[in-house]
View 1 (cartoon, rainbow, N blue to C red):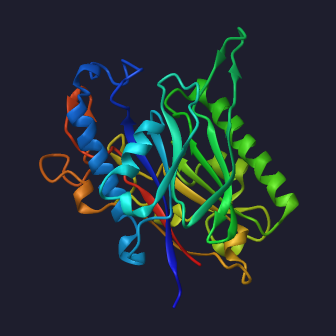
View 2: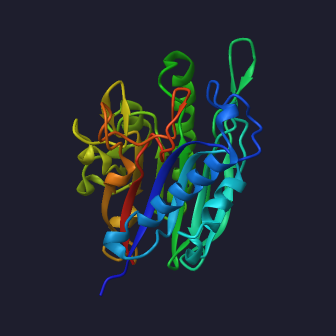
View 3: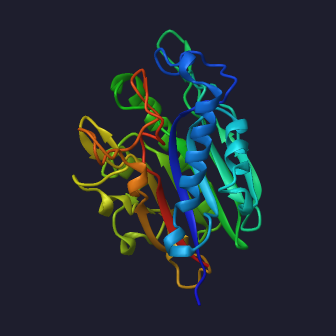
Length: 315
């Protein structure tokens, strides 16, 4: 019998801790971020994570990348929650210099995944006046998943809304990932790499395809290309979030050639969007859309404005 495991990514929508350092995380919402609301969100996010991939594996996920988390306290509260406490999880987060004080992080089951090395990849930007600016760091992790070597990059790219300002930042982030990837693959061509995160753009975006060398078909992956299964999942009826009243698939997971080699002990099975009914609004004009924590200045008490995405691997 084949053993299956889940690797997931989840943008958890402005998940700040109880002791807020950033008082303007959402316009007018600082006073509304009460301890009780924080506790409700911890419970909801832990419950969701516990359900991702459960139908396929009957297990809690092995690895979950997260973004829009303030600090390690939030991650620790999530893994201490009753829904996840039996998973023997650990956390990993480096605080960036992001203006909103949100970061990417990782939770992982210690009996499934062993961290060998980790570091934030920080990119400093300068404008024409030599003024520095920052965005979320890239989280790089090297480890062993069921004794198989694996490299993870967890990202939260700048939005394309401020296109002129952020386009150069986005390109620099892609180039930094590709540089690190090439270093890994030069050393060992069969190494397994997963890049996952909120790319703030669709899977068919030119930057993604050109800078990271992504492909939409597994059979096109034979060197340093990355398989992007999200291309096949993208449709006008389904996505991981809503942007301008349209479904978008900004949350993505990309896979290197190592997962598709015959001799690999860790093989790719499938990728999907975890868009269970409980994560959706159940009434009104927004029926079926992600059940959010806040909409503008109004507290709704939901999960997130994004659905998680996940991949099943065979080991």
